[in-house]
Image (cartoon, rainbow, N blue to C red):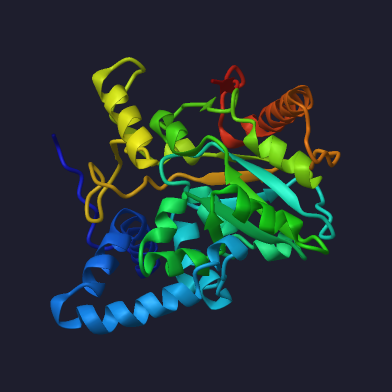
Length: 333
């Protein structure tokens, strides 16, 4: 395979953009494990272990109590460099009342949820300026909040565990102003993330709809154009040995393991860095939700269908602006 190397004369700004993405990819693929190993280095095992165990016990409930965002980290310049690498743009299509709490469905998941991270876990795309008075809380697999040190890294960006208690805490907050962001397709949908794919795992994903009804929180559909364009993925059609293995690992570990690839740091032919392709995350208009303490399955199904229809309308209204062919439509599985 012919390797296309990056030119030596690259502007400093582009080098900083690449460095920021290297940091981000490394963080989610290996930082938790590295931190864990460093904290258990033999000569520091007792000292570090006791200190961190004490901190962890005192801080145990923080993830399920709305998290602990650190604004200087959310506003760090590294995220602006990362935004410019693709680049990523947050698009507002309707006003959101800051006196209400919202459940936001983010689609598609993509391989590493890059658009959701930059838009809702940092201020790189100007979330607070576009939606004043609202605070985003993005949900992530509970597993990652059990990794020492890495949990604190996640909490600093405003992430919370993807369990019902954590979600309910955010949506119960008096006075409104909170957005619970859920990548509805989850890890399983990542196995179908590849350029040109518009398949969403949504047909039987209704828990987020029931959650919104129980709290009377409006539903907001979000579609991130370009999210699936960032990585190629090894072919894994349903029924193949690879897909069966990935599905089995997901059932055991709770996370999917897509075999993705794109470009490297010093060459453009292979590696784990995403391609430089634009992402446009379009936030749709809120869907009114009537509060029901114990909604029936029929009521949930009806609202779920309304949500799908509004998501389709959002996609169809904006797709041609973002280079999606007119004959392409969303497919739900």
